[in-house]
Amino acid sequence: MAKLYFRYGAMNSGKSTSLLQAAYNYEERGQHVLLAKPAIDTKGASEIESRLGVTRPVDFLIGPDDDARALFAEHRARMQHSSDDELLPAGPTDVACLLIDEAQFLTPLQVDDLFRIAVEDGIPVMAYGIRNDFLTHAFPGSARLLAIAHSLEELKTICRCGRKAVFNGRVVGGRFVFDGDQVAIDEGAIGSASPELTTYESLCGTCYLEESGGRLG
Image 1 (spheres, rainbow, N blue to C red):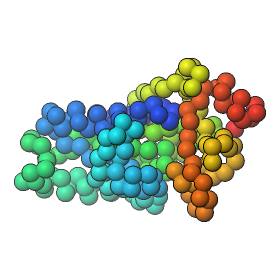
Image 2 (cartoon, rainbow, N blue to C red):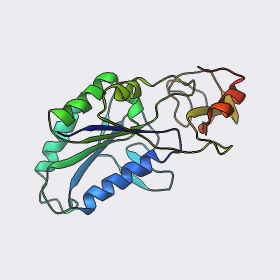
Image 3 (cartoon, rainbow, N blue to C red):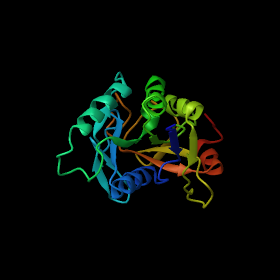
Image 4 (cartoon, one colour):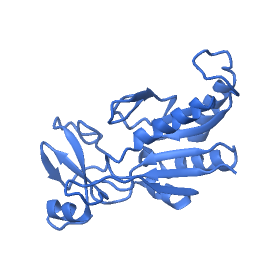
């Protein structure tokens, strides 16, 4: 039976790099993969971007109201009929694996779709994402993945102090902030007109509490 994998970590833990490496490993062996990510992740538009500078276009975007399994089936069928496409590696044209970046932005129902792709359609699914937002609350997609994924793997990174980082601090205009919408990508919170640059820093528990003044959640 194929499995649903959730590989998670704090910001800068190499999630996108690991995904792109997994895709390369499959294709190096003549197998085909499909790459997708939630449409809400506007960073890189329709590409997956590694912080090492490696990028690759996704095969499809998943909108907040989309049926992820139906989208996968559509693109799987397209791949199965693309045996003459010179861009595809040699070998059978079925999908060997579905790889999802920024999986925390999926809805719980879309995560259920990924589970069905693995169990009922027989295609392994590797989902990559972060567990918690900048207030230490679980993203709905991540919470569902933690509940039903067959395999969980933590990708580790370090805090500025050298300890293991487990939280994601939000920085706006050079300052850590602890209020705002759950989702903010680069330029500001989704739905916000704020022009200030939004970035994130991976923090250990000690440094997070120091920056938040003892606030946790």
